[in-house]
Structure formats: structure tokens, C-alpha cells
Image (cartoon, rainbow, N blue to C red; front, side, top):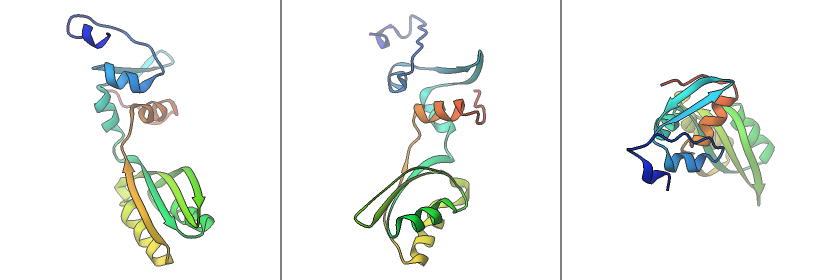
Length: 142
């Protein structure tokens, strides 16, 4: 219903349900402590996170060693999630792709004799942008 009012009306929607924001809003404003810290389209905000994205890797190798090696790689800024099952280690890493992290990790795993079973980049969501903004990181004003 909200989307049907587009074009003729301005609607201010205050919500924490960010997937709904992405589907219904043409423009998003993020306000923190009374100050606008970001203003753009949902897609524009998601693209503002490019260069810092989530990378999922699945590696066959010893969990502690794989995790330590991956998180010690230049350009890997955080370990967001890890799990292991049947000798496979699954990691979700936050990376700065200015450092060619995928190539570095691939080479590292190969040098260690570990099998890289999967590597994929996950696109940033509006929720990722919101969390990034609220964590005190860089402002992205339009």
C-alpha cells in the first residue's frame, strides 16, 4: 500500500525492518543522535559499502589454523562467523578488497596444503550499511 502512494506523496517511515525499507523506499536517511549520517537510495547505500564486503570461504583443513591464517591475511578486517563440520572450516570474513584478499587467501590455503572448497562474495545489504554506520565507522553522506 505504501508503494502505491509514491509520486504524489512523501511518506516518512521509521522502522528497524530494513528489508522492508529496501523494497518500499526510494530514498533512505539514516539518523544517529539527531544528525543525518547517510542519505541515498537503498542501492546507493549498499554500493557505498563496496570495497568492504563479506567473503565466505569453506576450506578443508584444521579449524584453528585455517581461522588464524585467514584472519591474519592483509585486508581481512574481521571474522564474522565460523563453523566446522567433517574436517571442513566455514568462515565469513569482512574484507577490504583493495588488498586482493581472494587471491591472497587462495594462495595461502594452497601453500598450506588445504583444499579451498568454496569462496563467494556476499553483496552488502541495507542492514550491513546500517550496522556499519551505527558502529561509528565512516559517514557516507550523499
